[in-house]
Image (cartoon, rainbow, N blue to C red):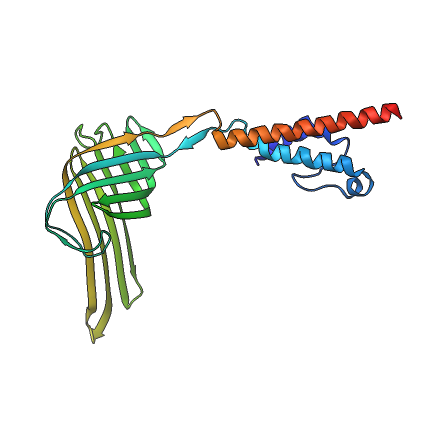
Length: 260
């Protein structure tokens, strides 16, 4: 819970605690626990729970990541050495759907930059999914970078060499207009030296690569709403219900004192 929200509600609802000191979001003073009636302490607990439920909802809008979808047809003869889509070489063309979900780090005239992306690519009945760190990637809906043609680009590369063992992992996906290209490659090897002559042995490379054509991109920009979502509404109602219960308990306590 933000500190400012907690402080605001502490000031507004302190009277509901019937004078019981509440030094922090969850802590209770020893004096209150030793001397306050159980009902008053229970009332304070209800007030605190209401604060926790309600405060995060005030002034907070709901947001949803941007979604870019490509649908098209692969060229015949693509191969899948990585086994991302069942493996092997594919001699026939197949339908492909690629969905990329990301939170834009900046938006400028239709240029959406992002550093992380969730990937889901479906070819026939095979599905590849992943969550990747892809700094400096973009969806350029207005073609600012590409002569007016909408374009998409996301890629990453990890290379590691400890003096003996080498490993490379590379990924790229993107395209423009009706085209889409995908490539994922992993490499590994062991360095062996004889005198000043060194070479990699046991070197392996696996690659999954395909290109698609006659497709289209569709894009849903980041959406936000100042109204809480259904789950947030439930929390809001519960919070106000607890606050109301605390108020009723306080009134009943005050009436009992007056009658006595």
